[in-house]
Amino acid sequence: MRPVQRPVYNGIAYADYKSYLPALIQAYGGYCSYCERPDKVDVEHVIPKTHAQHLTTDWNNFLLGCPRCNRDFKKSKNTQRLGYIWPDVENTFKLLKYYSDGRVQPMVGLTAALTVHVQATIDLVCLDDSNQIQKPLSLGRRRAFKLAEYAKNRFLANEMTVGEVMDLAETGYWSVWYNVFQNIPLILTRLVNLYPNTDINRP
Image (cartoon, rainbow, N blue to C red; front, side, top):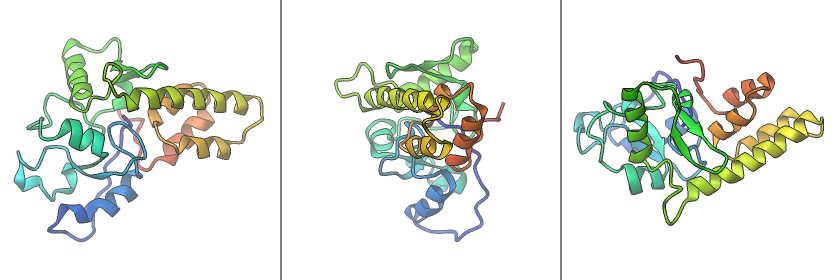
């Protein structure tokens, strides 16, 4: 779950929240704020509009969500932000551990309370679907890990340029790529810049 810095919105104040979609895609890229896939994305209300109608068109309550994460799992289950972690508030990269077999778990070493919040977020959008009958995220992360490792080996062997690595990284799963290239600062910098408003330096 890529941590993001929410830009200030100075555009038109729309009456229909769906009209904010182009601005959100420009702000964050066309990726789901939860699973990080470049799927078809919609305006996602962090606090569902059924629980906070006054936030229905509030820019600060918007993220991007794919149909799977937003409609199939998150729905209107959370009534507020409290009790979860959110990519526009916390450094979610430091709170989630991504495994090469596709699993996602709370990072080891967190406080007990924070671990509960991280797990609640994983459960809210079924970020770890490894035990589901259909597991698109788990299988997608496995493929992303293999692709990123391949790109890393080719890059270190001077058989792939930075631009070619970025072309592959645009396929999604930012956290996987950022994990794999941890020891290569040049690629990490480019990964931060590749996905708009990534905020990896947040505490």
